Length: 135
Image (tube, rainbow, N blue to C red; front, side):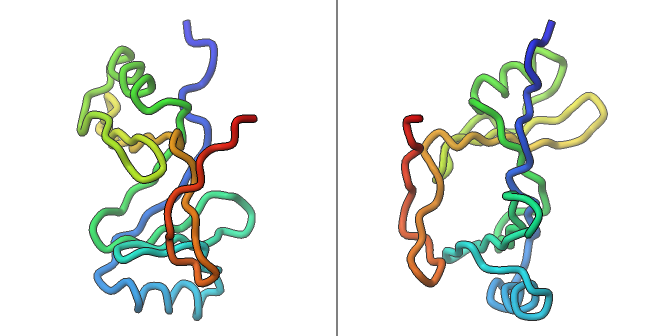
């Protein structure tokens, strides 16, 4: 019997874009979403009523990423429950990530933030990862 839900919250909704600069200009300048962070391939924009982000990415998407406590454990729990592996857990800048498919054909992206959160400069450019606080 499950005692705690596997999924914690939505981390982001990701859109694939061919031109990152044009996409930032559209979503930030024309639709009013503040730029939180950016790197060479992606940019995160604020959604004002949540800490989830709208992510524009040149290489992947569309997808919705869901936060879990531990991506490796969540991956195994999902498979044990009858889900199927799409991509086993792998490292990402802020932690670990895995892709699975539920029995109904839906691909789900699970990630943890075990390494921390993105650190940025005053222009929102990613400079590294801020380790998780111990409390």
